[in-house]
Image (tube, rainbow, N blue to C red; front, top):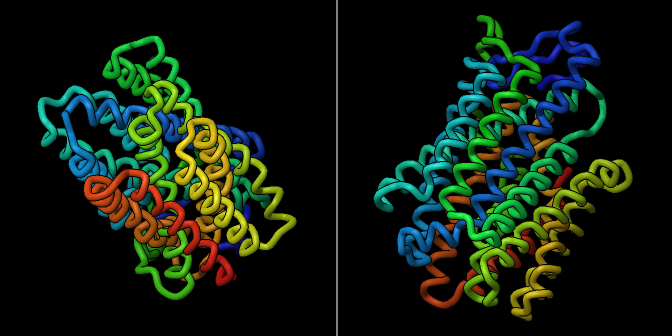
Length: 402
C-alpha cells in the first residue's frame, strides 16, 4: 500500500480501495478502529473455544493423535490454498462483505464441529473452515494496515492484542462451561451464534473497500515472495508454527501428559492467550523504543526458554506460568512481521500480506502431521519440543530483519 498520500487509501487486494475524505474523517476512523478490534477479538474467541475443545473433538470421533493431526491438516490446507485468491476476492467483494461472508462460514463450521456423522465429513468441512479463516485473516490485517497508515500511528499490536484477548475469553468461557458440565456440542453452538451476531454488527463500521477501477485492476492480487518478502515469510513461518502448535495442542498436552482435567487444562490456553494480549498491547510502545530485530530476538528467546522449562518440569503450575511466558514471547512476532511485509514496495498491502502468509500458514500445514507423527511414535511431550526449536530459529533469524 502506497504511503504517497495518507488522505486517500491506495488500492489494496488487487485494486480494492476505500473512500477518501470525508469518508475517512476522524469519526469514521474511530468507528473503523473499533470495528476492526472487534473482528480481531471475535476471531480470537472462536480460536479459543476451538482450542479448548480439541480434546472433545478427539474423544467425540474416537481419533488417535495421527487422525487428529489429519483433521488439523485439512484446515491448514484450506488456509494456504485460499491465500492464492484472497487478494482478488477482497478486491471484488470489498472488505465488509468479505469479512462478513467468511466470518459466518467460520461460525457455522464451529457450530457443527461435533455434529457430523463421521470423521470424513469433519475433514471436508475443516478444509472450507481453513479457507474462510485465512481469507478473513488477510481481510482484517489489510484493514488494520490501512488504518495504521491513515492514522499515522502504530495500531497493529493493539489489533493483534484484541485477537489474544478474544482467545483468552473464548478459552475461559469454554473452561467455565466445561466446569458446569454443559454438553460440548451446545457450547460450540452458543459460541458460534455469539460470533455471528458480532460479525454482523462489526462489519458495518469498517472502511468499505470498493471494486477496482480499470487502472487499479492492474495491481497484483498475489505476489510470489522473494527477496525481503521471502525473508519475512520464513520468519513468519517459524512464528506461526510455534503459535499454531500452542493453539491446537496445548490443552491436549496438559490433559494427556500433565494429567489436568479438561476444564483446568483450558486455563492453560487462557494463560497463553492472556499474556500474549498484554504483551501485544505493550508492543506498540516498545516498537517506539527498540529496534524490530531486538524485539523479535529477545521475544523469541523468551518463548523458547519458557517452553523448554514447561516440557522438562511436567508440573501443572509451572506449565501454566510457562504457557503465559510463551505467549508473551510469541506476541510481537506476527504484528511486527505483517507490518513489515505491508511496507515492501512493488505490491498492494493485501497481496504482500497474502504472500508472506502463504509461507507462514505452511507452518500450519507442516505442524499438525509432524506433531501427530512424533506424538504417536514417541510422545506428545517430545512433539511439543518443536516450539522450542521454531522459536530458537526465529531468534537466530531476527537479526536479518531490516
